[in-house]
Length: 207
Image 1 (cartoon, rainbow, N blue to C red):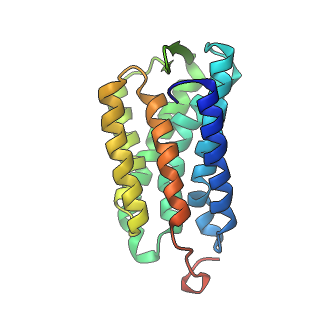
Image 2 (cartoon, rainbow, N blue to C red):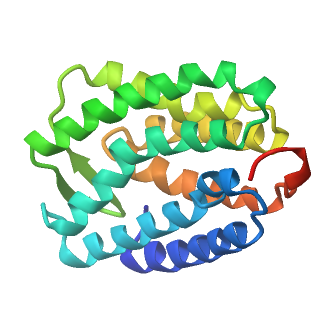
């Protein structure tokens, strides 16, 4: 996130707490991955506060942050949206899920074969991972995460997708070298909108 270790810690703790509230409201097992998204993103920001305090580098916290940001999220988001979707809305979500799966595999391979480092740059953190064909990976990542939300049947999820898309554009324009960190922080804050999502009725489907 921007600004400082304290901002990441306080913000991440608050977002994670909202994530706990989202999970507590779940009435169907298949809604759990989506409901847990703020919890995952809040924990992600807490991990980044550790990176701030350690001065960056390539330690375990940096690797843990990169694992969540890179291979986990492009698979988690479309899979969570697909799991929660009613049967008649699932077919169109297979495209972002396929993109997320391919992107996650490529990013996981990159993390397994190349070092990832974090660098404090003023009031932001920048992450460096030398990946070939990064443009294709970014396109697949955006299609998987933002695309899955925008293609959702749920107006709350579509609103979250629109916010994430705007955030991606702003972060790319203002913090090109720190895009991943700042966009993840923006998405974490936006994810709290899931708390106002109506609880699906188990009688309408699911476990």
